[in-house]
Image (cartoon, rainbow, N blue to C red; front, side, top):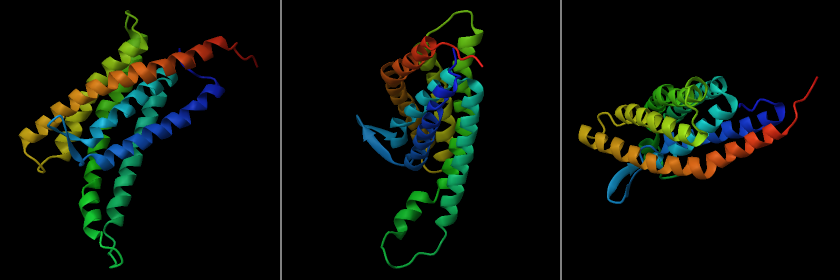
Length: 220
């Protein structure tokens, strides 16, 4: 059951803004490599599951077409973000502050990061939304939102991670280090995403659908 009435559509802008905010954070923080449990891991790994889980909610409540359009708009936003940052970083520095090198180090690869993330969204993001709706509407075996979300996010996050990391870390670190980052990132995402799905997304979707079901249809 999809949420389609005007009142529940009011939720969509907030979910969309949250989704895009999370995505821009991941673009900025991709090269922040930290250590957790002795393993190297990108800081983006810790927040990208929020984007996929939000995408699961949008696809479940509003359908594939809306979820797809949001992803495509996010891609355009990322590319615009990368272009603006790249242009602005070429402006000459003044001597007022001694932070010139910090901006060069942080934003010099922003266009490349945005492009890599956009390709990842085209593959992993769209597949995630499609799989959520396909399993619900096409398969004879009916699975709960929780199971479908965990399954869809697991496959899609793997595709997204392989594509994005292969592009973003190409010629920056060794192939072996890139493969290790991909593996560790995927493992962490598989620990975080189910928790978010079970504790946040599933109760939220259940609550919204329950409200929708309890309201009588409006007649013109």
